[in-house]
Length: 178
Image 1 (cartoon, rainbow, N blue to C red):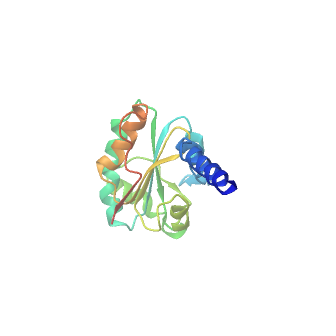
Image 2 (tube, rainbow, N blue to C red):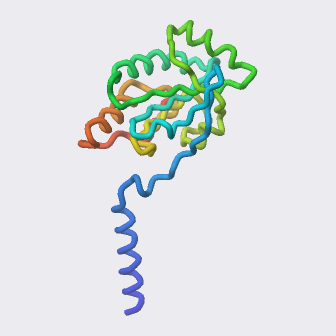
Image 3 (cartoon, rainbow, N blue to C red):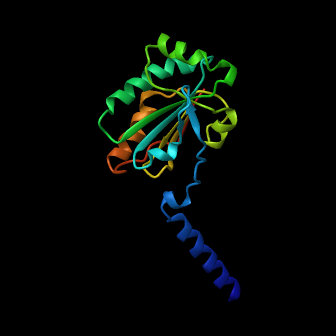
């Protein structure tokens, strides 16, 4: 009798937890301070209220250089919508002087944030290699992650799903592209 009550209570708690919205069970991401090359400090949390696509890259990363122009074009297609794209270099301090030349060579004009490393990638659930991309909802919760070079649909599907009020099938939570 007591065993049945304990089992029933345990099952009830398990079902109740499973039915909680993902935003309540999601692990809060870290919120480190990043800088631009001209020294301005930024935090991803300052963009709450918007959908945020965060891409980690490096000047020495070939797949990053393939991906950055694609992501920049995707970002431009969402102009005027509550979507922000943030590009964060994991280049070591001694190599950050290469960032402007790399962006210029790729015909890109965004300000890259710096002060990230492979530990930062790991804390965002992206493993320890670049490129890595994460899509955050308006509350700052992760909706999708891409470990490796993001394909267009890896970014568009979660962003469009969020813009559409989370209607329809949820996007893939994790894509590994390496």
